Image (cartoon, rainbow, N blue to C red; front, side, top):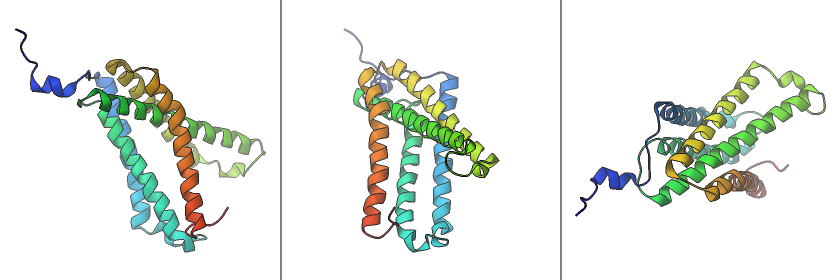
Length: 198
């Protein structure tokens, strides 16, 4: 008669522990997400949106800021789940999908920022003078985060034997859904007067 597996083995399900490098990447990505969420919280605590050109719309900007903060904190949780044991195949599929989603969303954001910079430098759109060391560092930080999520997604998919559905839903579906939400929410806020109409 085969002995029953120990409790910790049943809890882990299909999870295979990653190596030190991937674990370090997971921790760093989580810290990145928390740090950027902290910036958003700091903006709220210092009432950053209460002054300036759009001071009359502080409530709407606050709603958007907290929404983005929640996304950043969710990213931190997903990054940690990629490197620590957790139960169930369903959870693994959700985590795997969200890892690909984070990778795709950040990659598109970085690519868009680089394209915008190129157009500004070429004089096609915007002011090239706005491209400074701070702006470049900002894009580089997001580039590192995109690479980090990519490393986690590839490693996690291999370790949990995930297939194409998680990859396709994450890479294709997430940017579309998130982009739609980021357009829909401001539109609704503008309709009720909490944000300026475009």
